Structures are given as C-alpha cells and as structure tokens.
Length: 639
View 1 (cartoon, rainbow, N blue to C red):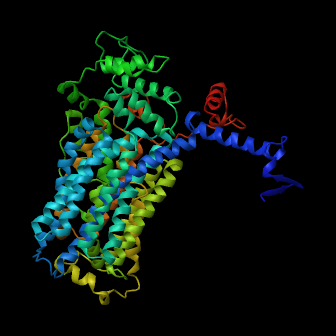
View 2 (view 1 turned 90 degrees about the vertical axis):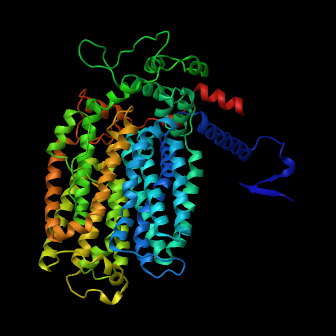
View 3 (view 1 turned 180 degrees about the horizontal axis):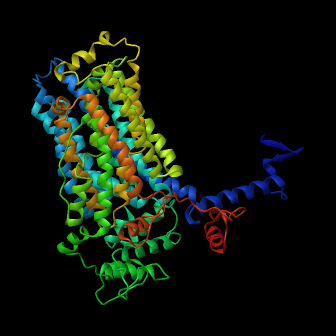
C-alpha cells in the first residue's frame, strides 16, 4: 500500500481529497512557480542570459561553415606528401611548378567568389547564401575522393577557392548584424577560431588516414552546416532593407532570447531609425540626423523606416504589402562607394591586412603593387603607406601551412617536422581562444599592439638565429617530403629548439591580435548599405595578393635571404604598430551606428572599451523575473 511519512504524519492515497496539508500546499505552490517561469520564457522581458545564448547558438551554427573552409586550408598540407607517394590507384607526376600550383591555385579563384559574394548576399540574404556555399564544398570533396587526374585535383581546389570567396561577405556581415555590441567582438573572433579548428582537425585526420579517406570524411561537414543553418534566423538588417518588417521583428525576437515581438519593439524602431538616417547630411542647411521626413504618397524605403520609428504601435502585416519601396539606381549604388564612410574604413582595413600579411611574409615574403580604389583620396592613400595590400587571414594560414614542413626542416627543428606542424596548429587555436576571452576586457587596439610588438621581437630573434647558423634559403622543395618523412634526420643541436619555439610563439601571438583584427574590422567599420559589398571587395583584393604570395614564395626566398626577410618584416611590424596607434579607433563595445558616424566625421570614438554601466543597480530586481499585471494575466489565462 502506497504511503509516505512526512514529519511524523502518514499520507495515504485514500486521503488525497482530505483537508489541506502543508506538503500538498507546498507542492502546489512549487508547480505554480515552475509554470510561471516556463511561461516567462515566452512572455517575459528580454533576459540577458537568454539573449546571449541565442546569439551564441546562431554564431556557432554559422561557424560550422568556417570549419569546413578550414578543412580546405589544411588539406594541401597532407595532399602534397600524399601525391608524392606512389598511389596504386592513380599516377601523378609532380614537378616543382605543379606543387606550387597545388598550394596556390585555390587562392586565385577566391577573388572571383569574393567579387560575386557581396551582390549575391544582398540579393539572397546572409543565411541563404551561407547555405548555398556548402554545395561546391561538397562537390570538391567528392572530386578529391574519386580523382584519377591532376587536373581534377586542380578543379577541386578551384571549387574550394570559389566557395571560400562566396562565404566572405555573408559570414562577416551576419555576425556584425545579429550580435549586440558587448558580444560582437568576442563572437566575431570565433570565426578565426573555427577556421583554425578546421585546419587542426585536418592535420589530425592526415596523421591517421589516407588523403582520399580524409576527403570522404570531410563530406560530413558541409552537409551538417547546410542542415543546421535552417534553424537560425536571417539578419534583421537585411530583412528591413528588403521591407520584410514582420520577419525582421521575428528575427530580433529570436536573437534576443526567443522573446515576444512586443519586447523587442524599441530595438526594432531604433534599427529602423538607424537605417533611415544613415545618409542624412549634417551641415547647417539640412536636416539633422535625428529629424524625420514626413511620409509621401509613394514613400521611399527610408521614409518608411522613419515612419515606423516614430510610431507607438507595431506595424502590422498590411503595412508591408501597402508600402512601396523605391529601389536604388546603379549610379546611386556607385556613389555609396565614393563616400568617406566607405573610403576611410576601407583604407584602415587595408592597412591592417597589409601589416597582417607582412606578419606572415616572414614565411611567404612578397612585394606587391597597389590595388585599384575609387576616388583620388584613396589613390593618394595607396601611394603612401598601403600600396602593398596583401592577402587576408584565411589565405595566409594556407600559405604558411603549405610550406610549414620546409620551414621547420630548414631551421633544423629538433622534432619531426609534421609533429611540429601540429604544434603550430594547436598554438593558433589557443591564440584564438585567448583572443576571444580577452577582447571584451582589453579591446581590439591593445590586443593588436601587443600582437605586433611581440611578433616584431620574435622575428628579430628568428632572423638572428638564422644568420648565426648561416641559413640563407629553404630546403629544396623536391627533397621536402623525403626529409620530412625521415625521422632519423632530426637535428641534435642543443639550440635547435629556439627557432621552433619562436615560430610557434609567433603563431600564438599573431592569433591573439593582428591575425583576427582585420576580419572583425571588416564587419564593423562599413556602413549598413555597403557592408556586404565592401566585405567582398576587401576579401577579393586580399586573396589576389595571397595567390601571388604563395606562387612566388620559393623564387623570392632565392632573391632575399631568410635572415634579411625576418629583419625587414620585424621592422614593418613595429612601425605598423605605431601607425595603427594613430589611425585605429577602439570599436569594442560600440554600436555599429556610432562606428559609422565616426568615419562619417559626425562624432569621434574614444579609445576606451565600452562596458555596460552597472552603477546604481545594486539590489535591483532582474526584470526578467518581475511579474507585472500583463504577465500575471497571461499566466492565469494559460493555467
């Protein structure tokens, strides 16, 4: 017979309808509170925890695509040695020229994807564009698995490069547009972590499996990325620009912790106001940025945004169908790229990529000519200090990894060169993790300065060591695989650990700052109207020079001695640190509209990290758990 003793009293199942007991009363109250808390998840105010979790989930799903891209960057490192071996399933004749093309042909295809990325992202949206990029990734891995010709390998590498270019604009703009300022820097830096994670995973796969088996395993990642992207919302910025106002509200509600549409209405209006006032003139004869133009009979899209921002009630679905949006002409779109709020951010990002590539040119070392920009202003700027715009973060990783075995062998690493490459990948991942944890506290400026100064010192020491042991050039590429696979040739010099440690330390320091900084800035500095296209343009030019860097690497090593390259690029790191101290503002914790206004000349950003003001809030009840009359009535109705 069922019975429970509580405080000396027996509760019998036959006494369930008896007088009120303390236990049953407590249980009833606990159940009511649990139901209330569950309903508050849907009807309560925006909770900071729920909002953070929602944004982190969206970014993590986006990062699955970048993980797939990281796999393509690490694949040539295991592909080249694998092709050198006698594969019974195929016959490949690899010359020095062929190997250099394997390490660089994907990079020349990336700008093609970048050039199309901005336009496709604006037309299809950030989410759908990210989904479609997985298709060429999947096709490339299938081709790697079943190829019997070197030309099919080249074609597969071209597909990976094209895919890498197509993902440029959507992944950068998506994070910048869905994240709140206090999380944007940290979550943006997870992009590099995901790419480095993909590279490291590929190194580990290559240690245990044949390269064809690795290609087959890699097919899982684009399929998984494609499916998971169905569960995240589209960017609310893009939805508003496309006049899908109700969908924009739902997107914001999802990203702010799966809350109600009423709770996010103030943020929705602020976003509409920001979009409406992006191009407002600021001289004394025109409207100020906060003024709103009246609605016209056939309103332009920005008039609609101003109208929504001034309304007290949400706009229902009928407004979307009754409102007519006037599209921009081609000339109006071109004028956007001649304005100061595009040219100046583009110059800053370009110079950061310049320093970022010179940070890696101690491994890749190349000289480049200036890219083409719009307008006399940017041309003059290119002639001065950014005329050598170089490859961006992702291609730089691929360049270093492609020749990593050769670098370690030339400097007489005391361990197996492939094991040293794995350590290099681990250092890069750890550096990304440190950046993610530190960026919200320290800020982008300080991390960048620490990174450049640390790299400069590492390069000076590496160059000095190479000069002392009289290493003028790298080991011949034709003997690279033989030396790498022979563990008996490991150097026994007592000082041979010095260059190994310094190179791994340089990789760690670079991923704490300058390796990640340009990509975060690319998503933050541009205005909303040019962000997608500008991100694609920035990546396109960077990848072009990345191709030149990889393709001409071996030839330039013969022209410049290894110690001379390290000394020169250490000087570039230190001088670049001083220049960025002057021109780079601190964007950590700042809203996107304030960053845009800074480059318009409307206001000036401070160099301090903005944190949430918690003064005067001691003892205040969390609004997410305050039950007002509206919430109480909703709970009673559902109960």
